[in-house]
Length: 167
Image (cartoon, rainbow, N blue to C red; front, side, top):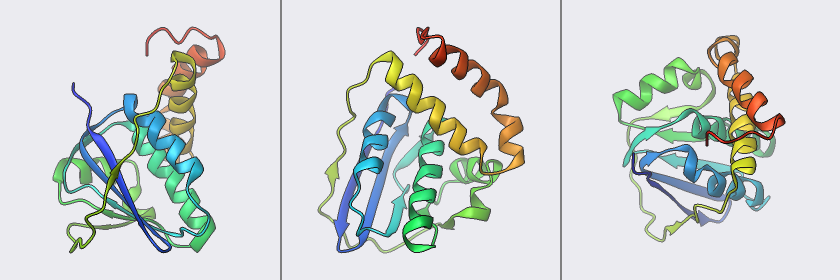
């Protein structure tokens, strides 16, 4: 599966993140690093998924991390723009409709997007990012705790045992 890319632009206190193609775990180190370094004046987040085809659970967990950042900074959830039934079904299954503002379209007037570097990673730090992302996702609600219990058990074993050979 060929991975997609993540683009971003900033305008005053707003960050627009644009996800294109298949957003899978191999590009999550760049997204995670971006979230850790985002300027503290940014408190409005818009995630444009119009050109996205798929998001895996690691990147759903990173969106949960973005929710945390946004809630701390502004008290408001990020806005997710998704017209795709398959992605919206995933959002429904993990409880995003209760936590994020989700709309199916918007008038994007921003054009100055830069691509996030995919980031360099080792098997170990990729495993740690995947583990933390799934923990964040699991903490959103009780259903996610149950749904991702086996994934967390596996990732904990792989990461804590330093046997991250499967990534």
